[in-house]
Amino acid sequence: MTEHQPVTNPVGNQSRSAGSTTPPEDEAVAMLGIVKRFGPVIANDNISFVANKGEVHALVGENGAGKSTLMSILAGLYRPDAGEVRIGGSPVHFKSPGDAIAAGIGMVYQNFMLVDSFTVAENVVLGLPAGGFGLRLDETEAKLVDYGNRYGLGIDPKATIWQLSVGEQQRVEIIRLLIRGATTLVFDEPTAVLTPQESADLIRTLRALAAEGFCVIFISHKLDEVAAVADRITVLRHGAVVDTVKASATNRRELARMMVGRELAGALLADAELDRRRIGDVALTVNDLSATSDKRLPALRSVSFEIRAGETLGIAGVAGNGQRELAEAITGLRTATSGTVCLGATDITNAHPRTIARSGVAHVPEDRLGTGLVGTLDLASNAILRTYRRNPIARGPLLMKRAVTRFTDRLLADYEVNPANHAARLRDLSGGNQQKLLIARELAGEPAAIVAVHPTRGVDVGASEAIHGVLRAQRTRGAATLLISEDLDELIALCDRIAVMYEGELMGTVTPQGADAETLGLMMAGTRLDAIQEAVCA
Image 1 (spheres, rainbow, N blue to C red):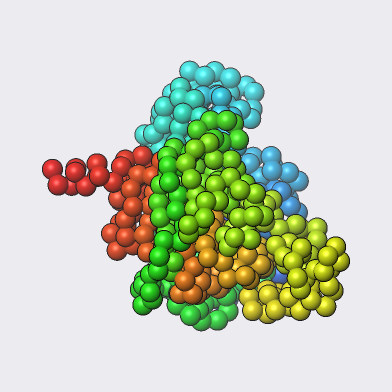
Image 2 (image 1 turned 120 degrees about the vertical axis):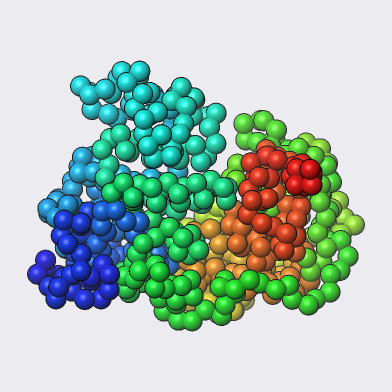
């Protein structure tokens, strides 16, 4: 596409040549006719995207829709194969991220680019050009205070990064970009690691920045947050723009429909009601379980709970508070230093992971490619990783090819994994299809207990809906499920009870009906439930 072809109007579907309602002087970023290919894959297919000064513009779409590629072009990480990028109305050609930063483009990533042992001020001066106030910490500290007061980003300039909460570290990233002169700020899933209170604070900050005239681009899978923060929303699907709409003129259901190209069944779009089912006997018992982290520091501190057959217990908490260690201690991937884990009446504490799996415990790990699947192997090889030693998949040391093919094809069909080609390499699949294959393999034997860690992290709304349906079906079947997630909406929709972890301890357990965001957020920040209840009654 050339720059003379029609471009999607940021308010609707008219072309700029047909008469835009947005004056050119309000245009902060324009990406016109962007095409980006990776071999035979077209990641961005003639995309036109316009974001204005003084607005929060959300960018949504399924995994693989082209959001990250488009923003990587804007941030100078990729160069487009065709199309034009304009900043403030002028064409630009970025050769590096440094060029984008110099043009006023700032990117706040999920994984912060901070040095833990440095102070806030020291982190801010890193990368600043020499000759400014770059190496004069006193001036930098004064600037930090000024920006903090102005934009509601208050932070102690002398604090060391490791002492700060995740939300405070995110403020440092934002202030650092503002001091470097960023006028357009791009946020990639910024609330994924925040408590509800921190998420609300961030949304207020983004609105305040927009009110000051900054352009804010907000990428998120959380449609409620998108509706709360955005002025306008651009929806991508299969590398192309579906539409750009005003946030006030749409709703969560309509956005989801545009993202996936069909109506969803509604599992993600309405408050879930607990289905009528029989809650059975205690299936999984964790009693006074303790374990250390990879750094040999306490990660679990005497954690205890029970889960009955047909019941789902959710574990909420900010990342890094012992959730991963809990899942690994239950499934045999981490040694428990004290306490017990029992499946029914059988003690499986510190048993070999293969023994625990064969006893009836399924594990969906948080790192699907690092722990659950092998990217370089084909789908069939990944599908049989649990069963390759057992009949009918194997007879003695030999794999039965026909049995492997039948087993794999059944999993791919039942869980709608695309492409449904068992010879395809796993790494060529989208994140959602990789996750569906992992879940299909783990649940194939109808396990008595399921340990699912962030089962929908990084997957799109369509795949999330499918995974939620599978977990509900397993609960109805009678499986006891431990669901560890940072998505409170997911926990409320799927769980019978929700416990909150903080620094390796359980802060309390609530029902979904009693799981208001304020209470959960306070527990995620380290306040025990009984203390919250006492304060309410006082």
